[in-house]
Length: 293
Image (cartoon, rainbow, N blue to C red; front, side, top):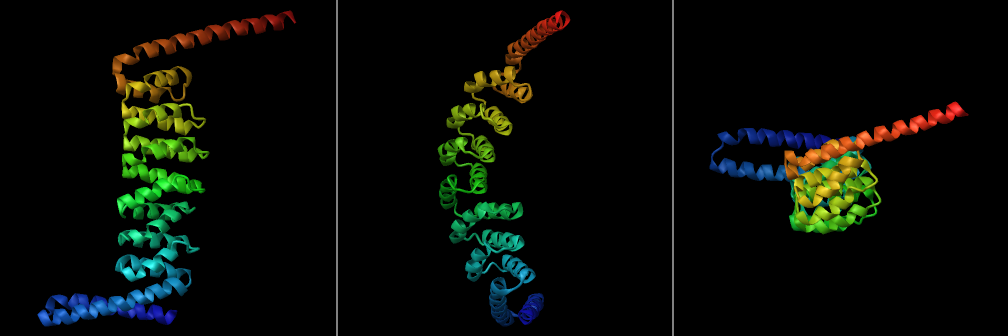
């Protein structure tokens, strides 16, 4: 393997030398140089593919990185296999290379790689998928919303939001009942980014989610939709949930206007007054019983 790496370094050196001399060559010389460069690139690609299969960790990392620069179609199979390498750096470079080559045939393997536990790898995988054929990726991502891996479902939802195609709206809505709260959060975020009004009723229902982040995301989505159907649910949040009240009030302002929240503020003040009165009466009874006991 060391001999092969030495050959790679020599070949790259030759390639650089030839490229530097190109400006001084005449038409015939340029043609010959082009042939030699093509030959060298081919040899380097073959060695990097071999190193990616057979090398130790550092060698595989270097090979994967090198293939991101060469972008030779012959390396596609090796790079797809490397999406399952035990080293996360190799997996990350492999995903980047496949994206750089806009390799549509790698889409199913990249979808499977969405489950990767390493955020760096997942980031590269997601970026690669965004560079491939949109209709194919959309279909695969929608299918992945029912995958057994929570990571896959979550990242698929996020990607669908970033792509922004309304075809994903109803499949995403179904995922608002997902058992994983992180998936549900990414779903409301995706629906916000897509901005399709058909999602409004489902997002309103998501305001009752057990998870605070999902409820927060739902409010932000309704704020972006600016749909009057959300008014009742947002007013309820303002009255019942002190933690989410500020963002719900802001959403109401943007949907209805500044003056529209005056009744809500008055109702909040009344509720707080009633709470204080009720608490005071309870305290009086407690003190009475303690004194008489």
